[in-house]
Image (cartoon, rainbow, N blue to C red):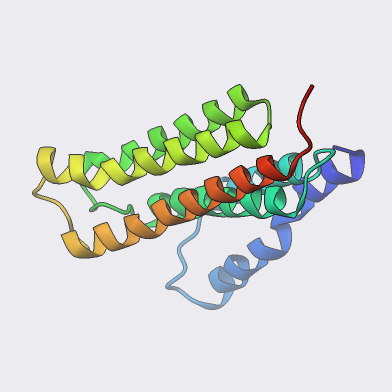
Length: 181
């Protein structure tokens, strides 16, 4: 990454954070503290950094960039929704498992050394881990599914499909690369 990329990572979240800032100033329903703004900036900056790191790799083709974008977007959505309202209930401890699943994906990305075949495996592993979370939650902590069990499974399926699609795009990017000696 170049210097301008780091500047983009730092500044890209600012326009988006103007939305809640205006909301706090004009409405009593917005109850953001400076901690909320700091966490939101960190999540948005990390998301921008992750995409720039993956998409600006030398030799990355369109499938690689689309896979990176989809995987990063899925990770962002899982994190944002889980921090904002918790995907599985307000008191259900299973919400922590979503962060564990994303950590599995990040470890996979590191182990893959940004190669498309390894990134595909990391995306599929993350999808599998996320797929299991509501099943584990229903079996271990069935009392708090405040949005409802079908709604949690439906939202979870969207995340799983996003990571599977990213894995398929990485796999396609790998097959489009010239054979390695």
